[in-house]
Length: 67
Image (cartoon, rainbow, N blue to C red; front, side, top):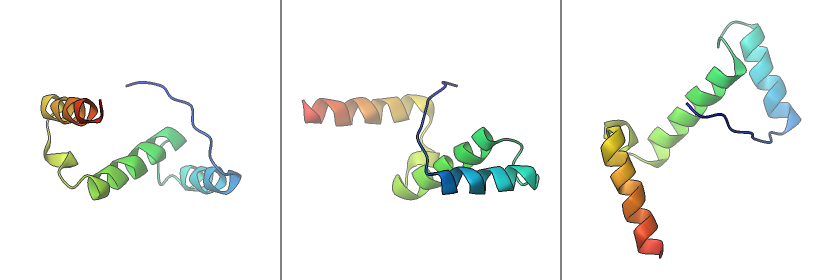
């Protein structure tokens, strides 16, 4: 796992913190990971079906087409 820095509207952070305080998610990071996973599954329909190697190949393919 890699650490990244993101900027969020205060309202988002407060909502995530409320969910964390309620025990819905064990941490803010976990809440964000779950939300991002659901977003990627929706936006990239095949995302959940790809193993790591296939996903990296897809990324390389898209990058090469742009160059």
